[in-house]
Length: 139
Image (cartoon, rainbow, N blue to C red):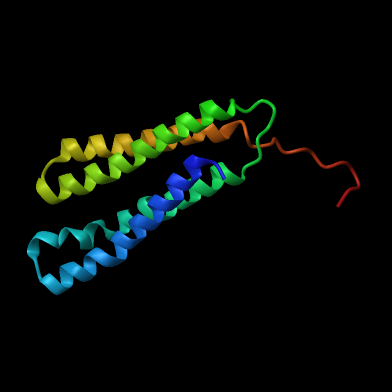
């Protein structure tokens, strides 16, 4: 398993723990400062857990083709995508918690996350095999 896949998979479990654990702590503490978790929990689950799990497994399982980018370059760009996605997630949560009206920072966080997904698409694109047409009479 490539190291970058491990990064994605381990961090996805960390986001899952945050998704399940922090609302419990917020409920026990009855702190209004942590009420933002109710609004952000879906984001933690979808981008933090599900998306990172999918990206990590896809980088690991998609077969490499002859025209795919070199392994070292794909690994390095994968780490950059990992850093962009997680920094965007952290920025989004920090801005929502510290300055709920900071729409500009929220936009920067969204652009950072979207850039990570575009970079992942560039890495994985050449690994996808084209569809081969069926021969006449084949089921």
